Every structure is written in C-alpha cells, then in structure tokens.
Length: 281
Length: 353
Image (cartoon, rainbow over all chains, first blue to last red; front, side, top):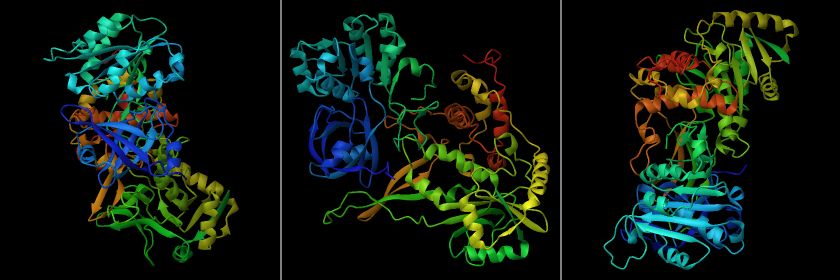
C-alpha cells in the first residue's frame, strides 16, 4: 500500500529573495531520487506539502510549470513555524515534498478560450505556473488572448520581476502590472488597486472568456463586483482557495467548506460552486 | 451463517486460548468507568459493562500514533529523510465491543479507505482486527441506535455477535475472521435451531430503545439555508468548546500531524484533533474561517448530519451510542439538534437571511 503521507526527499537547489521586505523567498528543489520527479506529475494550479523534517509541513502552491523540467519551485511567505524555519535553510539542505495535491485550473475547458489572470500580492505563484504553461510554444496556440492583471503594494513587492518584464515585451500576452502606489518617477506601468485596473483593462465578458482570480480576501472582495459589472458569469470566474491543512488528501477534517475539502476537491473552484457552499475560507 | 453455543463455563478458557494467536482487547473497569484495554494474561473482558466511557476507536486509530521517524544527525547518510516506523499489525481481537462501536468503524472507513487515497495506518490496523460483538440486551437510556442506522443486535462491522441468553452464550459467526477466532478459542458446538431465539431477543432489545432521532428530511434540505439557520446561536450558546463530544465519539476521525524531536532524532506523529478548537482551522495570517464557537459547533453537527449524509448517501455520521449526550458538561444533545435540523423550514425561520 502506497503511503500518501510519505514525502519525496529533495535537496534545496537554489533560494531567491523575491521581495524588498525579504519576507518572500523562492525555493528551487531537486528530487534526491530522479525517478520521483516523474511520479511528481503535476498540473498548473496544484499544490504540495513542503516537509521540513523536525518542524512539520506547509501546503504551498506549485510556482513552477509542468513544462519546466529538472526541478520544482515554490515561493513561500515567512509566517509561522515551518515557513520561518524554511526561510533560515540553505541551498544543499535536505527536506521533503509531498504531492502533487488538489485539483488544478481547468485547462481542457480553457482550451480555445480567452484567459484573464487576476492576481494580487504573493498569491501569484500558481498564476506564474499557469502563465509559463500557456506561453510554452507547445501550448500557446491552444489558448486565445491572455490578459494578466497583477498588482502589489509597491514595485519591490512584485514577484518574479524579471519574468514580468520579459512578458511585458511580448505581443502574445497582455500585461497590466500595477502597484498601489510608488514614489519612483520612472515607474512606467499602472498605479492603482487591482479592482480598479481590472475595470479599466479586463476584456468584456463573453462566452469564450474566463477569469482566474488569486489574491488576498480584500482584493477578491472588491474585484468580484467589478467582474459582475463587466458581465462575467459566475461559472467563468475561477478561484483558488487556501485553508489550514494537514493531510492534504481529504482525511484530517479541517479544510472543508461544506462537504468539499479545499485540499482534495479544490483548491480550485468556480464562483458558481462557491456560491453553493458555506463561506468557511 | 453459523450459530455456536458457548457454555459460560468454557468462556474463560476459550479467551485464554485466544491469547496464543491474538492481542486481546476488551472492556475493563477503571475507577467509575469502563474503558477498552489490552487484556493481560488471565484478564477477562467485563461483559457486564453497559458501554465504555470512550469508544473502541483507539484500538484501530490510536489517540497518538507514530507515522515516520527521522534523524537530524548530518553524519548519517539518511539524515532529514522520513522513514516508516515499525508498527505491530499482528492479529488483534476486541471481545465485547458493542454493535454501535463496530458499526462506527464502517462509517470511519469511508474516510480512511477511499478510491483515491488509502490511509495505511488505519487500514492495516482494521485488517488486523477481529471484532467480537456483544449484543445489548439492556440498552442504556441515552441509546438511540435503532434510528441512527444501527441497533442493539446490529451486525455491520462485526465478525461475530455474541448474545447472552442467561445461562449460556449464543454466537452468530458472521465472517471468515470470526470463524478463525472461534476455531482458535475451541468454541464449536453448533446450535442450528437457535436463530429464532436470537431473533426474539433482538426484538425484545430493540423495543427497549426509548430514544430516537428523525433524519428523513436531512438530505433534501438546502445546505446553505441550513447553515444560516437561526437556531445555531441557541444551540452553541452554552458550548465551552471542550471537545469532549469529539473525543468520546466513535465516528469522529479528525487528526493533527506534528513533528516531535528529541535531540537529533524524532517522529512525525498524528494525534486526534477536534473541530471544537480554534487552532484546528486558524490560518497563518490570523484569519480563522471558523473563528467563533458558533462556527465550530455548527461544523460538528453539519458534518455529522448534513455534509456526511450528502457526501456518502449512507445515513448520518452517528451510530446513536449516546456518549456525547452523556458526557457533554453543558447538556448539548445531538438528538435535539438533529430534530431542529430535520424539521428546519427556511420560510418560517425568522432570522434566516
């Protein structure tokens, strides 16, 4: 019997500080047993439990894309016991990864559709995975227009800056980067909260347009009415939830919203589905 | 299905024989209460026990259980890599488990043994265990098993059901595992005609169950309307979130996972947890989706009486053992809550949004 609680052993290959407050770091992991990489067969939107031996596990969205081979990547905010310990670890250290877990963005359904990605703050990790996945030469033709609205408090708080600037230069993706505010006179992108920029830049709703939203509760709260105003129907608004988790496989009982487990039945739900469940997230 | 007659004089000798091939567990009196214990040599299960204070769930699903072990000693090649622990899954048998506790394992199995994921700890322990039930001829005053999908002579989950007729025992052998245990104990005197006698005792016992729940409307109710019902304020008002209901419950399965390190080595373990505790759902940001006791009390009852009902279409997640009713320090009664839920009418609910 395969033990679903046993993590794959991994080595930290590289650590990047992502934000000016140094509270977000991206960890690149390499599997100690190369065959485990094939078993860790994931899709953009899934998460995994990062296992810091002796401290515990944390559920984190996978920031690398299935099209990127040889490593997996996670961006972690320093918050509690495990993430603080992880932030103090060094390249070369050994730990574990358990997954992939949960469902993913509905890529088959999104085929042939316009995709509007709306992200805020550090909830941009599985969205990065999704963008890299869609922009892959083997995949780009499967999707129509791609819009990305991504905001953070300040320019220094935006994740994956080098990639964002690369995407800005491409003509097969419409980038709308924004910050809440900045005193940088050379800032050449948008200034304003994500809901405002969404209202200005998001394409109008039609039957072939889906929005994927990931961000802090406050951003979601104010973006949803904007999408309503733009005419997006709730079955075309796709969201990824977070809840406290332990097992990641629907057994330990804490992350449920109604009869659904965020870890196993989610984390990806449409707004239409969420309208039918208790708002316990 | 075979019926075996056991002379009470040969009971103790049979139990003693079983110790050669099984680890035995049974109800034993400790202070004012009975609980399940591993039986030492010469120790017999106390069959006069109405029911134990804690359920039998810990025999298969321990309150604390090691999952993995690890070393942090970097001079070792396998440092920081989790390894499975050695756990004793040799055959074990529970003698004198009540039908409600046995049925509870069937309910809990729906959580731990799924088509997608298998919990190896629970499944291996369940497979290693033979359950010899003791039918309830005199059920307790809080027992409501007959309307909770169970009953005093219920057989689901059991390998054999023992009935005390007064001067001897009659046992229905229900499974291959039960067959093997009876062979090992040397109880083999068949009583082919005793079926009618057991049936009569069963009906007599069922008639003694004085307490009941109505569950017929639960699946048809709208989840969000029920969730927003005004009675939750009243139901949860006296709750002190002590978690007793979840610990005594045979069908509560929630757990936590923790690493415990001593020096350079340690274990990843799991422990029973409870939806009554704020920490159960607390986010790293400080946000808590079930931040009030109303949320938590509602979660417990909605899980048992609505989410579970909808998810598995196998009745309620309760076997009617009555433990939570007996043990709750503030007298919250699942039978009353079930009635409020089952008779809920959103149009008449004054506070419902």
